[in-house]
Length: 160
Image (cartoon, rainbow, N blue to C red; front, side, top):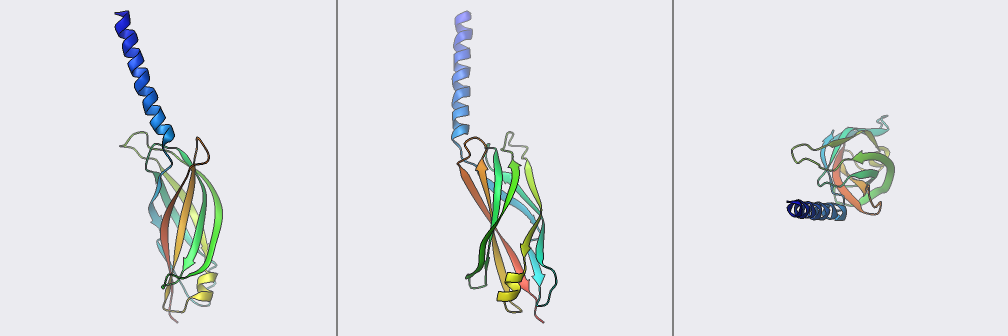
């Protein structure tokens, strides 16, 4: 009886170590699942200095815990030409990995602000610009494995 229990214990330990090894080898994988608003209107002479993104929800796509390190942004015109950026802002927020597939933790970033002056100076009225936002996360365990997720944000120059 003791031999059977010892054998079952060794098998369980082997399976648990194999599972833990797989999780340690994973890299962070994050995704933006919600953003409000997804665009902004501005016009020449507008005194609003920035576009306010009220909420950005980010989730982990695997079991790796990671930290949101920074967000970068670049401004593109309708032709896809870069006219401002890249610029960045440091952000610190923990993103919990998936433990139970039925329950996913959501990390919320509130009040992210993007400057409007580059759009007002470079885009003609009646045209739009796109802002490429990159959220960069680093894993909690090693500190050297990164993941980047991107999302587009629109800014429209209202015709006068």
